[in-house]
Image: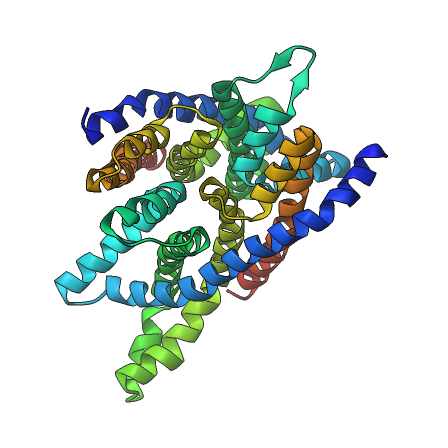
Length: 217
Length: 214
């Protein structure tokens, strides 16, 4: 009971942190997915330079830990005279992350569209652009949906890393409250529950979509 | 000391964290995967809730909970212990989900055929289902291992002296342009380290395919 009353007292402070977390996650998704789409198209481009550049962006975004990219933006770039506010650095790092992951998922989605669709469009005399945007993309993106939802959840959880560069997100609020009264167990449990309260239902919805798509495949 | 040797100083700790947590996950996920595929609804639901809860909470929260929140009598986790246990618990949940998917992907006929041949339930499970499931999930396990390698970097936030922590402290001591180097080097090093895992997984996969289909 005491835990519940304390949690109720801490919750308003945590909510301001949670709104920052949701903002960063939202930005990284809204900016990351279109970038991911561009990257996924660039990766299959005929121009070698373009393809190599896109591949490098994707491989670093997926292969290097998010924390490293975060530090690179926040501590590294100022040494070149490019300084960001901590929240901007966090957004940029997670945009890179979400663009890299989503581009791979979208590429797989586009590749999963049967060749017959392409041949049929050709036979019907549809233009290349029309084939891509109206035939391949809608089908490819449909099968990419569960994967993209998974990335969104991953990005929301990834916002917790912004704690490391003192962004006032959920984890930072929790730490601040905890260091006042040293009741870390209660406060980090509450923080974990806040994250889980969003991630768990989101995961269940993703699984639901996956099952529905599998049924119609 | 140059940036590269500074980063390399953290390499053993990164490997210790990754492999210890991976070992906990590989073993601990077995009973949990059985729980997930249990026909007992209560056991199934409890396992599902545990897996989703563990995966729904970011790793940094687990690490802080263990490092700062746990005190039983005089016992407190040291940073390395908290990192290994935290990363270990998370990998138990992720690997259990991977195992469950693999067991589910083995065609039902295999179990039925084993039953028809009069094999015991134990033999059916360990001799027929598990080997096939393992072949199905080995690429996913390798992917997870490379993910875990990257996640071990989060231990730097509870002051474990792994690669990211070392690159941080080097950067702090070198406020010049040189200070950006360790971040670039450590990023490249993570990518390079995950290459052999991907290579080994591909080899293992193709060898097992031969063993099954030849």
